[in-house]
Image 1 (tube, rainbow, N blue to C red):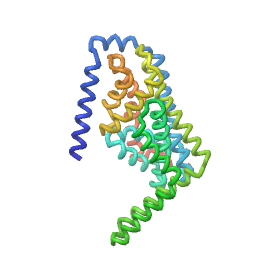
Image 2 (cartoon, rainbow, N blue to C red):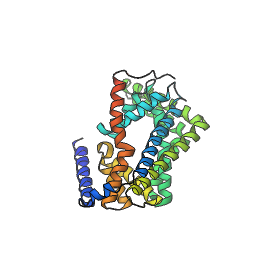
Image 3 (cartoon, rainbow, N blue to C red):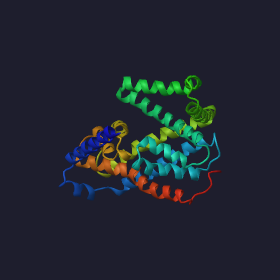
Image 4 (cartoon, rainbow, N blue to C red):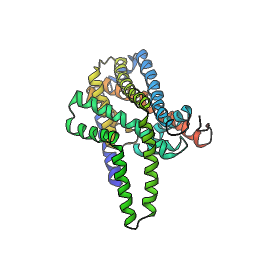
Length: 304
């Protein structure tokens, strides 16, 4: 744990140092004053649409496995931005699922289903555009196998739990077996609906494209012409750097990844930060209010 925190701190400091090196403080005021607010407004609207679509994707899958409402799903989804700012990303995802209500593992499986499809799309694009061959093919292969041969994965897990029971460890494997079966049940139900699968795929594709175009529009606001291919590369680098760094919300690492993709300059650094603020950081702030409102009981029933 200490080593991981040290790594995150080092990654954060390196990211800040790179950003500082990229910025000419004399040029910064003029770059801010020349900002085109029309393009920033377009990016802001795209970010709202991205959040709504992300919540809709989770809702469409989750309603296949349990009763829920879109409003409650949206509240939990936005709260996740805050939770991932104060917790490691994985814990943030796990915690926000609890806010939806109902069966925790069914809700978790529906979230995992949507995220898995998004990862497939991102890895596929990366393979096509940038040739991340070995790592990309491995990750893509594992996820596709999980979709196609999920029954085999399920049976393999049950065998492992059975072996544990035979070793005399009954309480823990029984608990894990129960959790796993509920998780698999939700995944199976979501997968059975072709309409849900296609809708989830299309929404995931739209969410990615909107974020890429959002970066292009923020760049235009600061007189930067960012080609679509370069914007997508920057988007991927931002996700990779933030994920590897372990920094809450990926602050610094996000911007570092974007600069690797679009190049280093004062306007590029400003573009990177404003883009991440519009598409992520502002929702961390909003998510804090939504999260504590949910905790205080200011929410509706999770049933639709």
